[in-house]
Image (cartoon, rainbow, N blue to C red):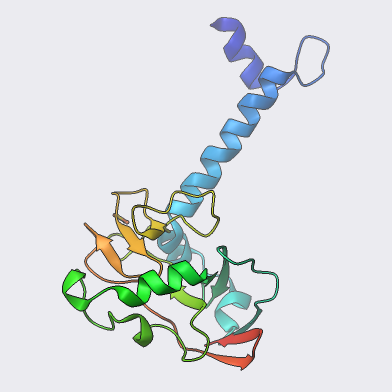
Amino acid sequence: MADTHGAAVSGHGPGGEVTKRDMIKLVATAGAAIGVGALAWPFIDSMNPSADVLALSSVETDLKPIAEGSGITVVWQGKPIFVRNRTPAEIKEAQAVQLSQLIDRTDGLDKQRVKAGHEQWIVLIGICTHLGCVPLGNKPSDPRGEYGGWFCPCHGSQYDTSGRVRHGPAPLNLPVPPYAFTSDTKIKIG
Ligand code: FES
C-alpha cells in the first residue's frame, strides 16, 4: 500500500521513468477531473464566464463533419449546445411519439423541435432540466438511456432523440435554442 501511494505522488518508477501503473493512475485522475468539470457546467459558467464566449451572440456550425447517429457539443453564450445527426430510424421513432407518452408536453411533437426539411438534425441546449448536469449521448458509444437520446448520469433522467424527457426526475424537455440553417450544411445558433 505504501509503495502504491508513493508511486502516485511521484508519478515515476524507480528509474525516473513513468511506469504503466503510474500512467493508469494519471489517466484515472484526469478522467475524474474531466467528469467533475462536465457535471459542474452551469456552476463554473456562472462563476467564471469567459469574455470572448459571452461576447458571441451567435455561432456558426458546420454540420458536414457530424456522422449520422452522432452529435457534437458547441458552446453558445457559455452553454453547451448539442447538435445531432439523427438516423432515419431515430427520426421515425421520434415522430411516432404521442403527446400522451410525454412528461413535458410543451413543444412535445418532434415537428415542433426541428426545422421542416431538416428533420435529421436536432439542436438542443444540453443542460439537464433537473439540476443542470450535462447529459451524455452525443457519441454512439455513450450511454443514451432507454430512449436512445441522452442520459443524465447525475440522477438518471433520460431524454429521447428529440430531446424530450422520458424518464425523470427532470421535469422538462431539453430546450431548443434559436437557430437557423444558413445552407444545407450550416446552421447559425443565436
Ligand atoms: S441533474 Fe440530470 S437527473 Fe439530476
